[in-house]
Image 1: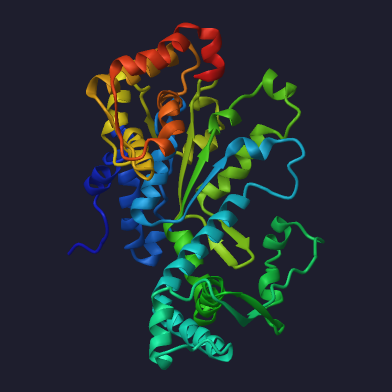
Image 2 (image 1 turned 180 degrees about the vertical axis):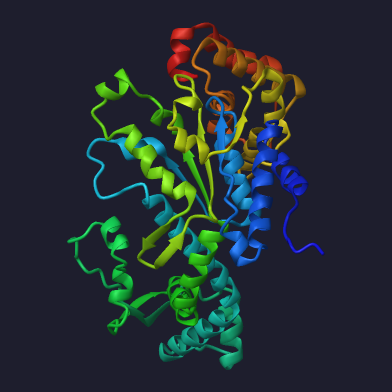
Length: 438
């Protein structure tokens, strides 16, 4: 009997293919890791403790899709996701935070996800509460008008009264000016000021505002009152430790050692590596919402490794990133596909943006090929920044069209290869200028 529910690895790869071109090995690796986490969760408790999460090390130049794969994976599975830069833990003057803070950030994201989900569940009930409050305010303001209560209700629902002013009683936000402890310190001691002050009665104050603004404030209060925050925090902790995904970028910067390490004024890179070990292995981290365990979280580390090798990392850290996958540099053909194939392709984004101004924008196949060619050539001539170069190139080509769009409503513009050449060729030929513009 199949006890594991959820997306299969093949389905995950198919979903990722909708947004990311190529990098099939990396997609397979994250899909398998995700499925193995589901399998591990289905094991009996005593067996689950013996099965370690296989964390991933992605190796590849900038702009090839490392971060995008991790981010899309989290979106596809509705998992809490946090991205951190490994180098920030080595910065001089970086006070009050430690490596454990990435786990605490994930817990906050998890609780927010659960809160949003539960908020959508009680939206309808909250809307009824808000409607009753607004009706009372409107009647108190002697604005019932013709047709009685039923007519007033209908006008309120249709938005006819949104610009009308009413007086409502709103809760004042308490902002205790307490800066004795850092956020990380309060987390480590299990302190949450919001919970500490939640037991105090919050004063309310009458305010005059539009119906539209009053609806927003009252709706927020109504949803808050209908939520059980203790249950939300407990579910958020569970979601974070069982389905959380942490992406640690620039892990290769921690591998630099020897002379470069001695010259650096910052925190020891090797020290940061040592601090990462227990998180990747599985440990308990205290947060202000409770203790969370990291053994069920999926860690994806990534780096270009242009000046260092994965073997330059501490052996213990290498062992905790057992799944290694190398992402290939993007070719001109990859650029062409990236411009048109993904659901959020750049050409689609610009077309939809200009459509809001009533301008029809389209790109010929030859124009797309020319954009890809110029982007690839610039990456070869200048620093290779991968697919990020496409954003700069397309922005430059569409600059004049975007500027004139408000005055060209109702017109259509087709971007052709010669137009792309006219906009980019002078800059592409002058590498000194391209360094600053493209």
